[in-house]
Image 1: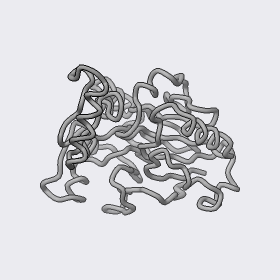
Image 2: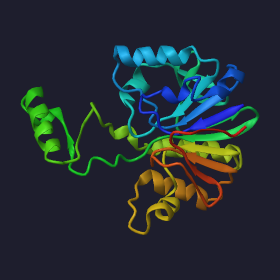
Image 3: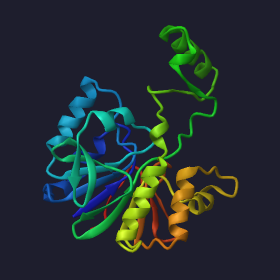
Length: 253
């Protein structure tokens, strides 16, 4: 079986037995997928507690990255392993980060996984320690400006440029899709193709390299049954086969 859900932001209560009783029937051969913003952030006792708690679950938990992840840790702290036809970072024995641009074979179906998205809360800038004489000066400036209502993040603390893909990752996605003739069963990402962003928000919707990339894949003939995303903090379906997920956990296989 395969279940899927939206953002966690390191809050994993949705996976409690009370809120997700279906897990009683699941084994490690079954999968629950998170569509980004899983919650690998800063190593601390609270994070380790929840990862250990999740590691005791009967199912295997998979996630694509969102825009709120510590990409330095994902890339450097956790080993890269072969996983169901693609590559993944192994977080725990039953927790895996699905790397961008691979097609995974889960329960006999093909899943194209490609995480990442643009942050919405950086309109007033990204602060860097390189621009301040010391850490205290940056923190004081950040607190002053955010108290005044500015939307800021701090480089390598609460924002990473890796939230958007490299040219290599995008090419890897194209290459792996070519191997399956641009036909998969499911797409799992954090954000939508640009045309769906416009459908959701109107003609003035922002675009970025990733929403345009997804749009190009669709225009190039990508075939899929359903496309699942998180990111937008909504629970809704668009045009029949684009699914925005948040708190709910849905069974798809």
